[in-house]
Length: 311
Length: 170
Ligand SMILES: [Zn+2]
Ligand SMILES: [Zn+2]
Image: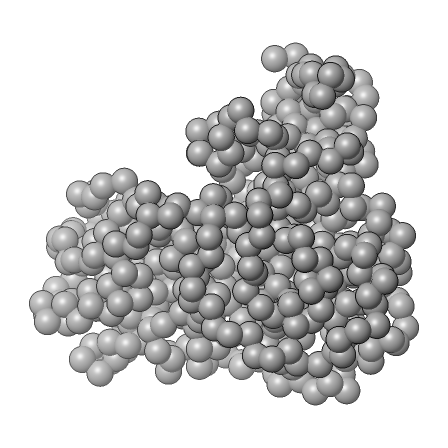
């Protein structure tokens, strides 16, 4: 195991955050041949489950790998959570873009924005399943980073967020649509489509986006339990930069084409979506049917489901 | 399997009821495994984190969860952003949880509330985070409506815990 090269601003043992993947510990640099190309990878182990994450040296910056937040940054997160910040966009597409951008950038404040934005939105109306999942993913990443940043257990980190979001002794307020940004309103988030497109290569979400993309982008689809398409996760895009392997926790069988898996995936705003920007009115989707049904194996961001019968 | 370990005496029939509710919620076998002694140096209100740490070992297998019950109060926790009222505690993705039954005056009548706290803490051990749905047991426990709710999960949390449990069993 060699030490990271000068182009890599991290040292062995550093705890870093990989956007959408969570906190990882750097353990070295490794040369590997991928598709006939010899590449140097920064190798890390995701702390949550021991999965090995490898990022080509040349991509370390562009994937947004960064050091774990400082205590001061966590304090800023608390301040933000307490503040009366902007409400989420009522236009679900705009919102999805904004949140996908925040998740892809992976800053701790961005995670807090996703959590708080969706939380406040849920005080107006229930979240569609997709956003409920996003909320959980962002919450998970936020909580684990606070836990690492402050050196406190995760349950304390989560409660530290929630004594703010669910103030003690008070019920959450009921919101009215008037408090939120009208659809098509100002674009203060500044996350344009180009930006999303830029992020796309890193957000190879094949695993979670079934190949019926157009449906996927409607709010209706957002609300429905995912229908699993043929497994596409094993596909390596030309731009593929990340390899996740398992060590120990049985996540990804070795020998399978490398794939990146994590929890904390944003719904992918597909470029194709642009062409479809118009359709489907916004507004409540037909009630998401309570899904207690079993999701088959490859649901996003979770370890491969065991199929074993319950009990 | 969920194993209940008690620091204080409880009526067997109450414990049985709690087991039934937990079995219904998680579809995981649940039993009252043992009465355990309070470690030295604890005075009410107990420091939950330390008590979980120092609690006597309860015979359990991998993937079992141990739920400790005490009738004594637990101490609020000072967190970086404020104080968190504490009626239970568990380690996220861990195997031990504790709840206090002091949240109800009468266990017979308050069993649902106690069970809701148990679901919440056990839910954390199966990696559930807090939930937005006030009806769900993963809603933060210090909210005024929490004690009135049922010992159930929302479909989202239910689905997540089912996945975790199935995974553990496989
Ligand atoms: Zn909790
Ligand atoms: Zn829930």
